[in-house]
Length: 80
Image (cartoon, rainbow, N blue to C red; front, side, top):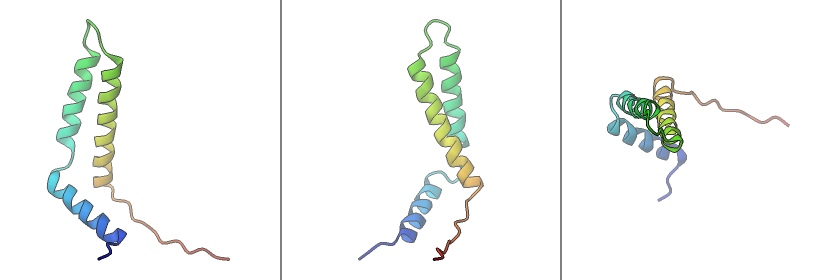
């Protein structure tokens, strides 16, 4: 049985809705706290950890944005 892209997208979105039914704000809060704690570490803030936490935070902010602002795909037709 062949699976279409639409089925994959639907199933992936459905799985994500089950995993995070209330969105990603909890993840955003968690990674914001981790980032803030590392930046405010007065002894030895680790740039590697700051970068890692920033990337995680950026990822979940984008996921939340995509969830709140679904993008409508448009069909384009090529003209010759």
